[in-house]
Image: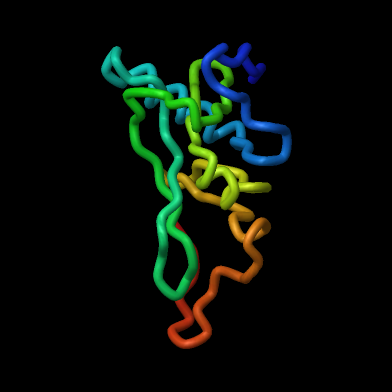
Length: 124
C-alpha cells in the first residue's frame, strides 16, 4: 500500500521508527473506515509494565497535538506522541489471528521482554 501525504499539522514518523505489516495496514484502515467521523486516527501508546517491560496498546484518537507524530498510509493514520515514539523505535505492528502484535519493541530500550523470575513474556 502506498503512503499518503502526511497532514501539515503533524510531524511524519521517520523511516525506521515504526512500521506496519501489510496485514496491520489493512486492519487499521478497516478500523478507521468503521469508526465515528470525529476520529483523527489510531493512537499507539506505551505505558509502564510489570516485570515483562513496557505495555503497548492502541485506542482511537479524537485529536492530534503538537507533540504527536503520524504514520499515514492508504486509509489509515497512526498517531504517536514523542515519548511513546522513543519506545517504538524499530517496532513493527503486525496483525495476526485477530490480534495486533508489537514486534521488535525492545530494540530502543534493550532487554529481552522476558521476566527472569516468572518467565512471563511481552506477548500481546
